[in-house]
Length: 529
Image (tube, rainbow, N blue to C red; front, top):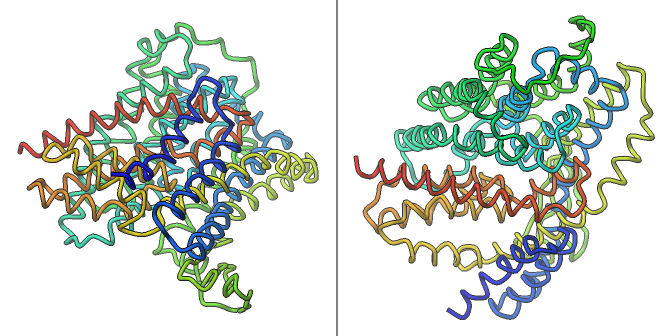
């Protein structure tokens, strides 16, 4: 119990520091909690200093993945802004519908759904949020809304990776994996209307607008989730990707024709000339170009994914006690044997969505529009990244230390303790363990890799359905996306929100609790049949 108390302590401290009345900024709270975790794993858990220090180095290096993604997103949207593309997109969205509900559902729901299905990595909120701010929505509320909405599609995000890879360490026959995908999709489809309405309520000051447009909201919601549910019966790779694409097209048509929308409280459309198809394609290139590159580089059957992830070393360097460093022809960076331990780090420069597509699409946008200064864009990106960089380094060191030790790690001990509390009522707790994994790791895939085995063991011990419990794990890992520190820092950074991470966390965590309880109830219904 003594060690268990210390396992909980760093995360309780982190939540307290970021949610108290005068919350500590993430760039202070996260490094401080990483230091506390360092002391705990060294003195309480008794890990060797060399291994602990190797994980600190690995954590700092792993932080460069989200750092570069955020920098790429900031760079891309600054290019859109200075080139004039963002203003044209704003005009086009207002021409489709100036109803704020329609704009929110198009950008923050359907478009972000599609992006999640193609990429993951927390990019949907970072891409959707600046567009909404350009339409006049308040930045802080947009951040909360985008994070909440970027949960339903995460179960099958990044071409199904959280399912087919995240559950790969658990022995499952194909039929069991298919059942997990179906049950996960069914739970998410059932809870989606509630989550969408809650998310909209954060950004719309007049709540009656939601009721007046509830028809459109439900039609738009189900235009994504019903194809997503149907596709989950066929495979686990494309439900979010194709569900988002179908839903986006339907939502655009619904908004254009005003189906389910109320004219009350809708601002009058601005008297703008109708945009030509060429100008619209040009201005929206940063969006459709990004989606296209993500899809091409994520679908294994197209062949580009394997090329971008080639990790056969082309160049080898010894860095002494720091480890063995290698670079592949596809610019996959590897550092192995850090401080002569088994700790390692890998970063795929061309596969992680930073250089491709964000940097590349941003540069093409500036070239195509022939307007805007590259130097100014780079300067803006650099100045925006200092605090997020410190916060994310602290976050990834914190995560690396809390997960150190495998079965005996602090995170795993917390999971096992929660399991002992749940007993035969584990359906209510399973989603929250999945969410805990995403909160720590910043990834639904890593949450599934970490806790799927624990969830399976609990299900077998308590005589519960393994597929139901693993579906609840997958749903929990997805809902945890909205409280993941990496994602909160990312969207706050892209929107230039200072010291607001605690404000965001306090609101998204309430939604996670509601989401988890509804998921647990549905899991209970599954178990009864």
